[in-house]
Image (tube, rainbow, N blue to C red; front, side, top):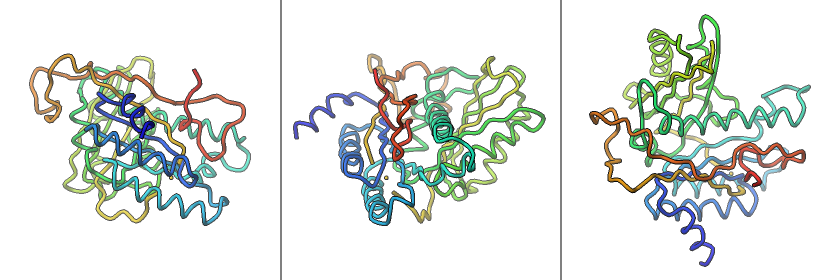
Length: 303
C-alpha cells in the first residue's frame, strides 16, 4: 500500500503515462499492471509498451508473459507489444549483440518520441494531447512504428517501413480504426509527398479509420523524411503479452484551463503544442553489459 502511494505521488497530475515492462518474470509482470491501474485511477491516458521473451527462454516464461499481457490489456488504454524474438531479424548473423540492441533502441525511441513530437513541437499541421487521446483512449492493442527514407520515393518508402517495423507484434495496420501519423521532413518536403504517404497508410487501415496527422519541418532532416505511425482500434487481435517496469510520464501544465476533450483540428486559433512537458523518460542506456531480456530502451537511464 505504501508503494502504491509513492507511485501515485510521482505520477499524479500527468495527462499521459507510458508504462514499459518486460513480461515473463516477476517484477514487470506483476508491477506493470499496478502502475497502470494507478495511472488509470488518476485519469491519465495510459499506454503500455511491453516486451515478450525470446523463444529460447522456454514455454513457462512465455506463458507467464501471455498472462501478464492479458491482465495489462484489460487496464491500459493502448497496449504495444514488442517481441524480443524479432531482434533476430534486425541484423542477421553477423551483426554484434550491442549493435542489434542499438537498432532496437532507435526504433523504439523514434516511435515513442513520435508521439511527444506531435504534441510538443510546432509544425505546419499541429496536433496536441487531445488528438493523441482521440486515437489512443480505450483502443486496446496498437501498432507503433517509425520509418525513414531519402531519395526519389522517400515518402512512400518511409511510410512502408513505418507500418512494417520488424520489432512490432503482428506488423500490419490492416483493420486499424484509429491512426496517428507524424510526417517530419526538411524544407523541401512537398504536399504531394505528404499525400503519397498518407494515402498509403489510409489504404492499409480500416476504410472508416479516424486518421489524424501532423507535419513538422525540420531543417536538420536534409533529404530525409521520417514517418511515425500509431495504429489502434484493431477488431480481431489474436495475440497479446510482457515485464520489468519503467515509467515515462508526460505532465501537462495545468496552470491554465484547457479543453482536452476536443481535438486541435476541431478548434480554432489554438495549436495546443506548448503545454506538455516531458518530465521523466528512460530511453537509451549505453551500458556495456546489457540485460538481454530487456532492451535498453526499457531500462531506466542512470542519472
